[in-house]
Length: 409
Image (cartoon, rainbow, N blue to C red):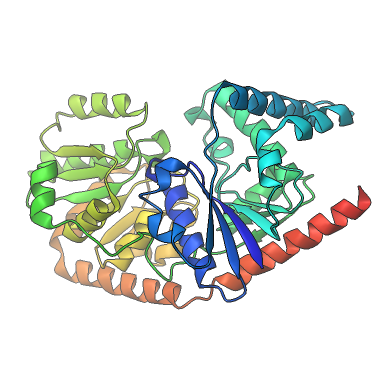
């Protein structure tokens, strides 16, 4: 099977999607059934994905389009695709104009692929000579609409609907996402397959890690700290950890907290909360860090805390378990099924409970050892799984769907 894998413009700032993309790519490279992978990448990914680009199974394809003409054609084509789906009678002219104008369609159709997998919610183009598979990660805007502006909710709803309507197959990582898609997008014809995230290896390209002394100096780290690797999106719920730290400080417990990840526009709100709680000397937000730095921080920290309000799946939870770092997390979506032990779960709205669990995770040796033992069991189970059959089955379903759709056109 010849697979196209479209990772162009997916970088560390994309958080979990970036890690997910690497997991899938490693699995595809190890599959005997996949003979060749056309890897579509952008210039800014050369250093990050360098080892993959040099792999014997990979045909690297630079796709880093830009400029006024490209952007104009892209936006105009997307306008016609949106118009096609929003008009009650579905104007075929609008769809023909989309297909004719879209610059990515012309580029991608040059390649002979059995299937194209785009590991995010939207493909650069549809109506191609081969089937398109997308990975749908969540429909957060339907669960927490308050985290989005009205315009963002409109754009997301339209974008998701057009993607789900145009794709040949949808891959999700968890049952709850499939349930949401079937519930909120009832009339899409493409099937949805749950494909567990391949956890055989970690998501980093290499096994490198930054030395602890270098990290201490680089980020001005205290001797002991807790860690939350998460971009500062509102749903990541950094506020809960701040409130928990404030509770602990009032009890005479001074806990230091390091949070890594992209500083979004919401970070200014987090800064105000830090100042209001007078926690400036206990909190470090590093921004984006390198893979080597992040692995080093995982191995230095005393505890990983994942306070998220909504998550399709948590990469940091997997990595904490892999590196045998004590970890506690919120009791939402897929996280309870991932950790499979209620002792290490908390209500993300219950700051007192979070504070108590942080304190226990730093001081109760029996609790710490139980946590590590649970992580070892869970990661062993996950690493022993065979993930590729589900993905290959999804690809084959997409090929069959595309073939039948072409016949009926």
